[in-house]
Every structure is written in structure tokens, then in C-alpha cells.
Length: 458
Image (cartoon, rainbow, N blue to C red; front, top):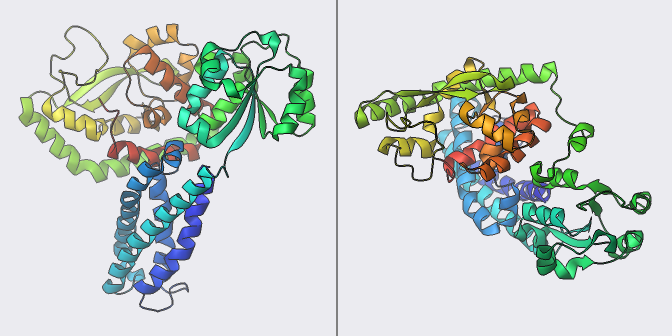
């Protein structure tokens, strides 16, 4: 569905932007090789990037039309401002100032209208069932319930028509499944699944039974030979939710499915991205860092920086750098997780945490090679041992360097419990398994959304 929304955005911009551009150029030709051609291409390109950075193509935004529409003006305005600044720096390639003002106004009004129209059309198409997929899930037990929980209740109804096949040999369905989805459960032998797939015109069949032993795989093979794709439960969750379900994790699935591969070129490109972006950010945000250090000193007169032992790639211990946000004696009783409304946080520290400014000194850790811009959150050694003992494959997240931002950080709020650690691990394993330099760049872009809406910061 996210791709469909993206193409609707493109179509709406292709229709509206030329009209606004004509207004901005007072009827002159703007799509030839004149200087205006640069702005004509740059404005819509940056607009799309900003919409993505604010999470307007995420699953949550796609399904929550009202919340998505509320973010459109900010995303469009950021794109217009960024492009206008670029045009000023490239002033020789831009027309008279009056034209720049009109093009800026045209971009804000035009792209807002285009994005709103695209989302309203998308919402109507979604309500009409255009994007709904027909799925058959083998099994209606605990694993099926976990899958529905991961997909989310609003998503299930809006995106899928799901039928659960509970062979009598599997035993009774999970009581929660029966109570919530009883109308979707078919108590039929697995030998009849091909007939059911043909009847429902299924798009996909998911192997989601709690136990795989003594299952008639020939019936599923017949479905595959007849053109109905059959996928494993873990592969379906990975593709749809972009997480690895650690509750039902099977080492065999990890072993035989693609991923967990890092070439020399991958590591060189990642390190290059780390150095270039870190230097740029340090230069851009140096005034904010200077202001923050002055505020910390005036607040309680204590040290400016806080150094703490953390774990990075291959279990290596390093000292992370952060602006101090807690009282000097915050951990006199030992290491503890930060809590919501933690009384140890200073007045200035609360703002620094919410704005993520306290994380900026970690760019020095990135330049020193101890961290990366993107990776799992660096955890404290005092907690790693307990988490690794409680969560399977927890140490696999240390295949890459710890990150200033990451897939878990932008998708899950800050957590201070074992359940939170398990949820974040599902995102970290997905990142490590599906690493690419493009994925890193997309995560960096979406970090802007977390900075602007820091609901999970502590």
C-alpha cells in the first residue's frame, strides 16, 4: 500500500506542479534548459524526500489518514524551505527574486494540495477494498494470534481478508483466536486447502501452525503448483511488519533465508557515510551544542559531558559521550534503566533529551570508529548479560556497530523492561539481517520524524 500512495503522490504532483510553476514564472517557459529547470526538478524531489522523512509512507501513516493529513503541511513546508535555501546558494542558476518568492509559495500551496488529494483518494480506494489482500493462514493457534497482534487490529481489517484453516488434527483453536476471529476460522482437513484457495482466490498461503510435525505438506505443495504462493510465518512477518518475531524464532529459518551478509564494499560505504554525515552534522549543530553546554553549566554547575561504558560491535566496550542530563549523583546506588518522568533528570536535561541534542556528542564516537550513525542502540554491559540470558540471539545485534539512530529507535519508543528489549530486538535483528547502505540512508532520513515527535525519549 505504501507504494500505491507514493505513486498517487507522484501523479498528483505531475498534475498540480506545472500549474503552480506557470504561476511562479508568470507564464514563461520553465521546463526547458533555462535556470528555472533546476528548481522545477528540485522542488518536487525534495518534497518527496521530506514526506518520507516525516514518516508519511510508513504503515501507520498509510492507515491513519487523519494523522497523516496533519503532518502534510509540515513536510511540504520543510521541503520548500530546504529547496529555497539551495536555490539561494545557487543564486546564479535562479531567476529574479520575485520569481523565487512565487515559486516558493507555489510549491507550498501546490504540494500541500497534491499530498492531501492523493491521501484522500488513497483512503477512498482503501475503504473500497482495492488494496485488500486475501490470505489463508494454516493454523489458528498461539502463533496465529501473535501474527495478528504484530499486524495490528486496524491493519488487519483494512489490509487483509484472512481465513484460518484449523485442521482437526491440530486440536482446538486458541481461545483468543476463537473469541476474536471465530467467523474467519475453517475447521477443515488440510487436504481441502487447495479447494479453499481456489474458492477464495487467495493471494497467499501462510504456514502459521504452532507445530509443523505430521503436517500434510503435499497439500501445500499442490497449492504452490497451482499458482498460490506459500510462505513461512516468519518470512511473512518479516516482509509485512519489517521485524523478526523473536517469540517464534527458528534458527533454521535464519540459517536458510537470505541476509546477515556484509561485503567489504558495504563496510567501506557505511564508514564513508558515517564520517561525511557526522562532520556535516557537527558543523551544522555546533551553535546548539555551545548553547546547550552553557545551559548545563548555569543549571547546576556540574560537568558538561557524561561518559558511560557501552557495548558495540563484537562485544567491544567503549565510553559513549553525551551531554549530561541527570544529576551528578544519579547512579550512586548503581546502574538502573531510565524511567518515565525520571526524577534524576535536570530541568535542562529534560529538554535536551526530548530534542535529542544530548546525543550530539556521540558524533565524536562515530568519527572515532566506536559507533556508526545507524545501528542497534548501544546498551550498557551491566544489562547485556541479563538480556542475552533471557532473549535468544540477543548478541547477534552486535554483528554491527552500535548506532546513534537505528531501525528500533525510529520504530519503538524508549523502553526499560524485558518486554521492551524483546520488541526492540525484533527490529534490530531485522536491520542486521537486511543491512544495506540504502537502508541506512532511509533510517537517517526518518530520524527527522523522531526528532520532531520525540514521544519515546527519556
